[in-house]
Image 1 (cartoon, rainbow, N blue to C red):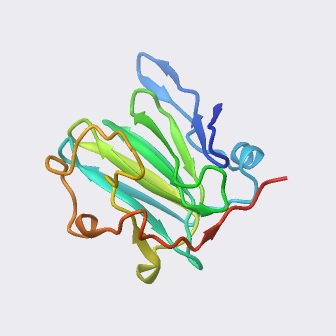
Image 2: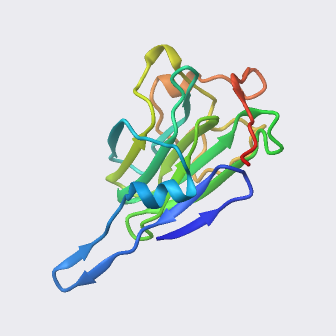
Image 3: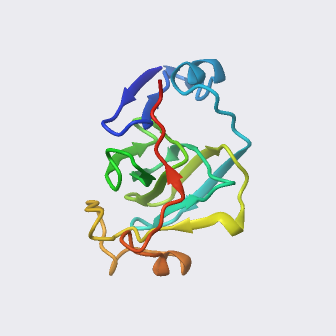
Length: 189
């Protein structure tokens, strides 16, 4: 497995190996021991799978607040997305900064987004399937988000608000400047 680090502490990309022949391929997409060597002490409680039929579907920027904050290990099994994680940990030297990367069925990358980050993605191919593991169960009372196209975040999405396909919930998310973060940055030893 190839592990990639980013300038924002806590974010990692993992690319599992694929072994192929004329029948197809095999890949060990998750191994708890290998994951724990990079991100210790994480356990997943639920797997989620979404299908977005059209390019330009934007989901996010979402997060759950404590006490049900979630870490996510995300990947694409069909299609392509631009995936984004925004640091929303107060006291972080990278507060308000983001990492954006392409996840696709072809590049096979997975993106680890710990609690304390807002997360979202935008589909860039039709019929994109997005799968992710989470560290806590869905808690509607803790569900929150920030507008995906907030100019203060400076995210270069492939679609603007006029052409993006959003859920009703995502059209009314708060601005970054109005957001009061419940997350606090803790440096890892």
